[in-house]
Length: 106
Image (cartoon, rainbow, N blue to C red):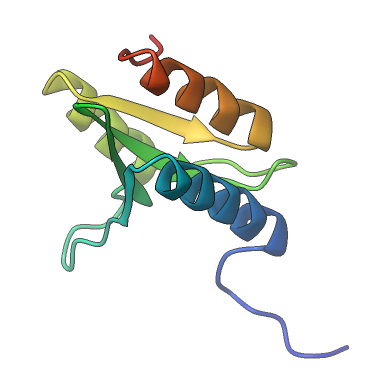
């Protein structure tokens, strides 16, 4: 058995690339979100059409957020932010469709 990466799985990476490509191609900003010293922050800040949301990406099958990630998402939501866990291309399309109409899904 070969070396196994402890970073994002290929399916998760594919969904992330799909998201970033789609947002970028539409003129949006799919910024990578890192916050040294603050664990559990979402993977991406998406800025498009005057809207901002946070996205945590997980692999389509079996991907689950940690307790810390859930807590960070709840913190963001308490501040009036929209934060999503996205696991597949259909969920990306749903988010983008709403953003193109000038709103964010509930």
